[in-house]
Length: 178
Image (tube, rainbow, N blue to C red; front, side):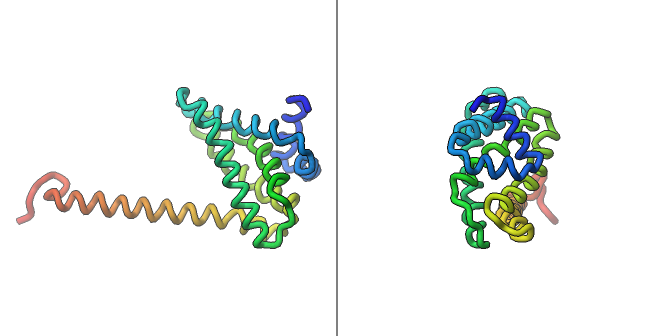
């Protein structure tokens, strides 16, 4: 498959074309082009955040994180009655990373990509995994909410440690009470 056709298919996926999702899921030749799309998206996120030395790292990490995310969505999808095998679902998620190309736009591109990526993930789970809309939303929101809760706990623990350390050092300005 040529790269232009790959990009057209990826664009169709991110514009919620269910036929393109099914076609990509069923196409064993779609894996490598999907990996390339994902790696480019990771590289563009480094460029968009002016972290040029991190381009190879973000390209590789993008692939790793999509694999992890797809595995989580696949497993939760199975728990909710999904029917897809992992690799077909993974192929579609890789192509959907075309959304991350918006990360090239400083400050807002990553937010746009993340929000639209949630929508694409829900529709992908409906179409490829065979889930209802409600179940697909649950599969996407469960990891998002768990990750948010973990971050909130870590920030709270850091804040408590910081305030506790400030108290042990005689207050914020080193003064003593009374």
